[in-house]
Image (cartoon, rainbow, N blue to C red; front, top):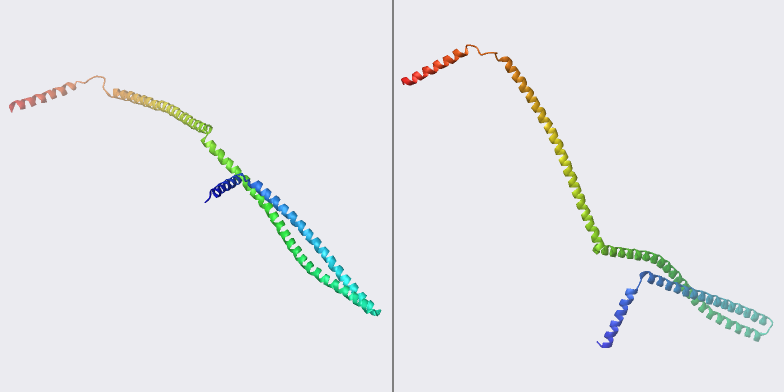
Length: 257
């Protein structure tokens, strides 16, 4: 491969890349629609010109037919008057008009075909332009939506990596920690208050129970004092004497062993 071919390829590739990068879908579609409108205008002019040519040919053909009929009538008149040479000349002129009319008829038929083709192309182009307008609006809306989405994604991407967004995240974490500490302090305060009330309630129960026991002991002591005699009877001494006698007898038995 020659150096010129390589340089040419590099230049063309760079130009293609630059053109592709510079292409704006909305502007390209607008320009394409403008080009189609210009083609439509030219095609309308061509159809109008073809129709005008068809009308001129039709007029010329009709005129040749009229002239042929006129020469036919003149030939008949000359023949009726007995002038055969004049009748022959009239028939010659008639033949010229008939031949001219036949040629014009062929051109007229061809022109009719051309006009019909141009009309069909015109209708087809008008339909394509109408479709292109609808598609242009749709593609323009899609392009705008795509640009907006791309800008949004770029903005979100920049926000995710920016210092400001990081500061927001740190502050959010700090607020969460503060809320957690506040909640813990509230729970601890509530627990301490509950424990104080529980102690008070338990202390009240103990005091009440203690008072009840004191009252029971006092009532028991009073009943015991009421049952005991006021003085010791003389029978206690005999009871102790019998015990001593029994203890002495037991000692005697031990000594005899």
